[in-house]
Length: 251
Image (cartoon, rainbow, N blue to C red; front, side, top):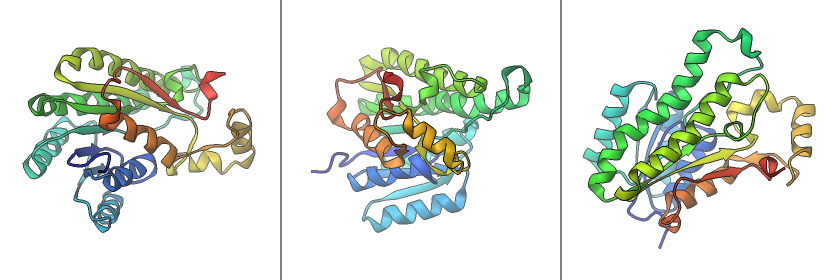
């Protein structure tokens, strides 16, 4: 039996990188997957890959800061698949090297809205259906920046720290409903979002050198951890923060 047989999962930001790896792995493990992203062409490609694996999938354009869009996607998922068992709030944006005192309010709001408000809206709209269904698993993708301080990363660090704490609050609030909520904290992972950063070979080598395992992470490394939290194997796990960072935050 596959680890997600008969499960229905929504994965945001699944057009590439970690979200795509999560969606494909979920499909291989038997889940019906709803793929969302702002990159409509990428959504179509991932849906096609999932269907080629013999699994069922839906794809939607989604701006995770739009409550109306969340409502529509969640309702459509239930209309088509009958339920929602898993939500992975993966969509997010990174910051830049702007010092705190030079960050514009517009940039602050953009990062906070996508990373934190988007996570809140996902939980808000999925939880009622999970309660009706007798439970579920929510996995919110944070970052090592949600566990440690980071210079010149004000709104990103704040948003990812917020994802960590909103996950803990929700875990306590909905434990009685058999809804588990956990956060995942990737280190530096080789994805399209980090491509520009990691093209600087000196930086890539430096970060690998200060990571105990001695290499950068891959999207599949994160997907395997998310799969565990999404599956019934973690039925007694809620409110945890799972670093997938090669040991970086253990130092």
